[in-house]
Amino acid sequence: MKRALLLTILCAFSAAFSPWMTWGAPSKVSCVDPCGGGDFTDLQAALSAAESNSVLDFIKVAQGTYTDNFTYESDQGYAILIYGGYKPCTGCAIRELDPSKTILDGSCDGSVLVIKNNLNGDIVVDGFTIQNGSGSTAYYGGGVDAVSDNNETTGIVSAGNITITNNIVTRNAAISNGGGIYASSQSTVGAAGDIIVNNNIIYENSVADYDGGGVLAESYSSSGMAGNVIMINNLIYNNSAGRFGEGVAALSDTHSGTAGTIRLINNTITENCDTGVCYGLFMSAKTVYCYNNIVWGNTDSLGADIYLNSEIVTAQGANNDYESLFGSWTVSGLNLHVNPLLTSKYHLNSRSPCIDMGKNDPPGGLPSTDFEGDTRIIDGNNSGVATVDIGADEYVPKRTIAPFLILLLN
Image (cartoon, rainbow, N blue to C red; front, side):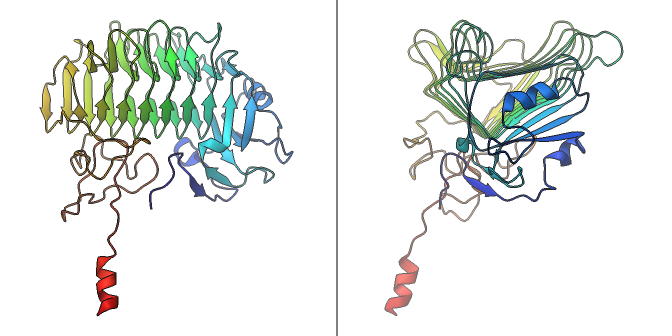
């Protein structure tokens, strides 16, 4: 049976579980629980404490609604990991990965969540609904403004990675860039970090002046190596921007160094347009891998669903479904140019031409599930050959009961 759109996946964890398998053992674990079962009852208090404690911080946040404009800014160079979804009154011992149950609300009075590591340091935001960020101070990232920056020229000169996963980001507005999410890793002479935006639902966000109505994901090094931008299993719709990337602007750029790679796999980017010239997906990097994406209905009479910057050296685009393209692929194949026939909830309907039309081995590999947690790969058209679908949703065919009825009749 198809799971609910809001990623309702119950995950019971022991107190020992955490995402530390990737990051190594954290130095400080904090629980935010208004019930009183944790270290803090207020998220801002936990963020403020983490700014200056000179350790890597992992902050667990209990389910509930938190209304504020949350900020963290540190010059210490340590990672900060913020995870929502923990059951209240348990000391954050049990996590339910349903972002609709842990809500950060900005009350239209600035960006909802601002995380800045000014001297390296990774950033992770996972498992929240982030909504109603806007106002005169929401210059970048109306919902999430996440920046790992490093202007040093000696010593540690790299910038950190930024990971934004398993969130719902909606009804946010920014002035300059990144209406819903602004995620930027920037360095002067060293390597910039990777930007990873996976398994998010991003809708009804806007940016007034420039780029990235839903998301602006950027890795930039002035004279070093820019990092990669990776986006997998995102549903992005009904966003708008003043210039490029009504849905997504993805950039891995440099002034005099080496740009990195953009990899977009199994995303659905649709109905992102306001008025005038619209470009649903804007990409700029040295190399682009774009596979198994639906990028449809993001333009009117002007613009294009996909915009490939002329600075791209290698642009591989295959097994996507889009109507219009600005630029050209250097390697392409099996792209569709037909209506994907999405349901009102942006699933594939049973007649969708995107079912079983993806590529099973795109560069970097496939995600093991779709944006809701359904297993990939499923033989959606019952052909006997399991092929991945195009887009964020993996179609689950209805099972016929005819053989069972025949057995009963016999």
